[in-house]
Image (tube, rainbow, N blue to C red; front, side, top):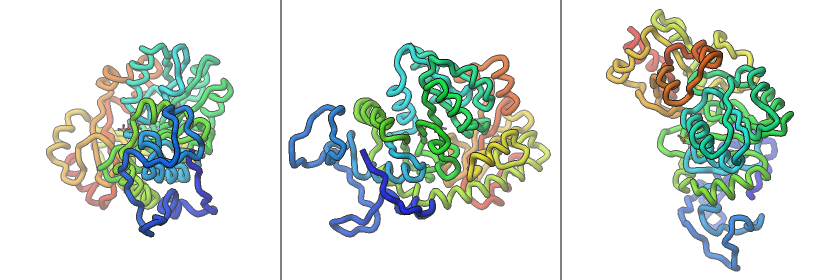
Length: 402
Ligand SMILES: *Cc1c(COP(=O)(O)O)cnc(C)c1O
């Protein structure tokens, strides 16, 4: 297991640059090396089972542990204030590692009723097929969460801010409900990043990131991370990394490590740009609703202020006949790319249609559907506000909105 180095109470901006890294002891290179080697020369015999790797084992094989990947894991652990981190080839590989290492047939999983579509579909389709009982609830309604988390519950899975509504979940309150039933809480914190929220410090047992998004920050490397206690990370390593095998390439880990170094600085600009764009949209006559946790009009603004040190760069908005505008966005926008994904230096926008999402992914009905529609209506444009000049972003949007 990797040990988080002593960080002497250094501040986040310093830690993002220095944590996990040290000058190369042989060459004295200041910047990290990339170790692409898949295997390592041994001085003594080793076992071949993932179950008996000694605590202080040398590097043996890169699916088990790799020095470049470990640098990223150590940096992420320090920023999240978690004991340990394990990195993966994508956010979905990280998500799968938690779901498949914690749950078994007969267990109950309580999951937010709106979240990243890949996660929602994996749980509803694959986990259900393997005998896990999957129950969903509106995670912004604590009474609904309390009703769903029964004594049979083994894992509770939230995402905050949630895709694509930007609904916020009170992590400390859900952790309390979860632990009362001896279950464990996992929080997908991709939209928040460790700069905004550190769920472990609020009682979560696992934090999941798609490193592809803000942590990488430049849209050029995919990766994922799971963080938590050293004890909880042991099965994430054995089952998720070593056996399921979705490990990250050292090259991608190196790129993401470089991205994380500027994460605190980038998040400041993502936030100020998103606020400027959100205010512009809120004042625009064709825009019927703007959902940004940093706006006083957001229904969970107070909770966001309490739980987030940064409101991030993700916002959603509605316009009349929203779906009809997508084609115009694709052909007219010059600065903002019409594309999925988020958290890049480039701004990205895409339409998320409520009926389509219900049919393909969420299948909500009754109270849960109307709570979703309260936020998302017939659909939203999800805008990941990048690092361009906010005036250029507003001008680009003006061309489409008229
Ligand atoms: C993108 C994303 C994922 C999946 O991550 P990949 O790196 O694309 O596999 C999971 N959760 C959230 C909130 C995401 O935005």
